[in-house]
Length: 246
Image (tube, rainbow, N blue to C red; front, top):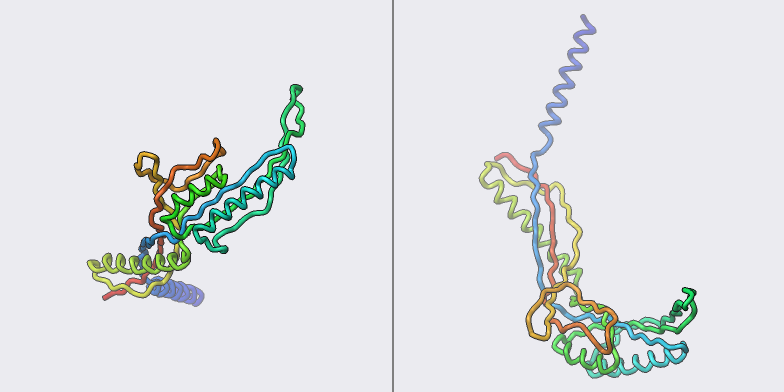
């Protein structure tokens, strides 16, 4: 009988502890806050390669050097700062062709050099493109618009998303007869800037695009001109709020 009383007392005490623990768990509300920050682009980033092929690697390199010099001279007219121009080293590749017996044999060298620049006066894009064509640019790898303070835009988007989360939570609890407590958990999704611009063809019609790229084409052929759109950074925040009994 004594053992039974001890076991029963332990059972009742355990049940009381579980009940208190359950009552101590806060009631919560999970909401998602979203925001978008939009800003005009600070620059247009252009990337391209200069390629020459010749049986002599030296002659191919000399030709690439000549074209690079012409490009640099063209850029000087547009007052592009040195820190906005990056250039790769010279790349040399041996090209092989197959003979009648399907055996590979050396045919020529391919010498190339890549260059990336940021054009900050966006209104000069068309004029600069024309100068680059004159300088011998025939392959444009990519064009995109961008901003200098991308990290700051991300912070602004997250802050606005956090405010949106609280506004949504307050709207939800307003009719439930409970109060909104402090946030217990906060998390964010993976953010990335969404670069948008419009590509314009010869007829002047606007076509939405995300990236313009050029395959190796005929002599001095470049993609259609484009008008850059605003930079958009999206922020999403998940917040768990405590609910308070009024």
